[in-house]
Image (tube, rainbow over the protein chains, first blue to last red):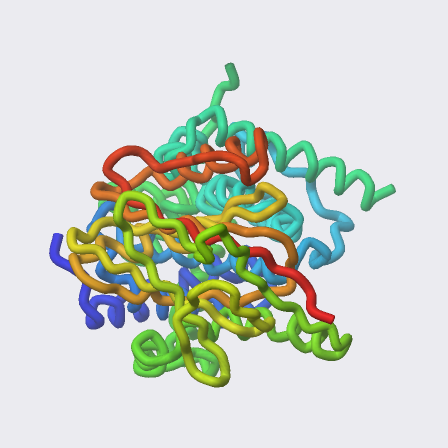
Length: 170
Length: 250
């Protein structure tokens, strides 16, 4: 695997920019913040292009950068930043996603609203589970965490999310 | 044991399909599904339209401007931008925060283990200067780290806070392998208004390290005895520890 060049990143900007932007929209749920995060993703990709060794697809590599950029933004916002949770569906358990696409998109929207309430460790696995839709085993391989740890963090997310949703509806 | 039910396609597969990066056979399978699944067909259609609009969107910056920023902008701009509201609030309240490096018996707040040489430069409006210990720093000052090693390796920088929380500030995934010699790390560290003792662990590993394991071990060590632990990375790694206390001025 030869090192990425600036020209490679430029072609990725054309090819993957829209997808990266959509992922940032899903996570941050603010249009201007999503554009900023998308741009910052490619700035970092240019800056750290030599660290890419083909260990994953370019799309996956860019998304992993964008996830980090978005999580930085969520940390900056702090835990008081989330929008109304009324009418939001409860998330499914950590082992099963809805089969229906619209239900999954709706669930992703709800997860995005809740993300800023959790610490980066939980955010990392939640993004991979609900936005990338990886299975626990795949998240384990991606993050280097044990499957048990991944499942525990997802369970923490689900348990607290349900509690928050319940309180918001009360 | 829970049984896993995978959807007929995942978000990752849809993204790969939209980017033209999905294997042809799998792409055909999903497109065949879309002929029977109107939701999926509509979604793919909308995303393709978004991709077209993206190329002409007025919000979209030119690649040249991204390249210029990556190559020449101060790496701290992002953090400065993100923390600007916090800094303005702090200024309004006239509550200037400072960080006072903790002094050891040898008047040095930087401990080197395993021969890793790290320099810490203080960047402020007056320029930059190397820290020697004892300086009083202001909120908004920035610290830039320089690693000098004759063998090079994979760098990791971890922050340990007084709360016990540990954060990965720089990962080897971001920085890649450092060649032998001197390297200034991108992204300087902007001093925030949190108070209390903190430590920076700068680790240089000879092979790609398991950074999550570092975080896990450090957090566990801190939970047991606060900062009074002697955590070290595994053999083959070099370590430098920068310890300081941040507190408010009058």
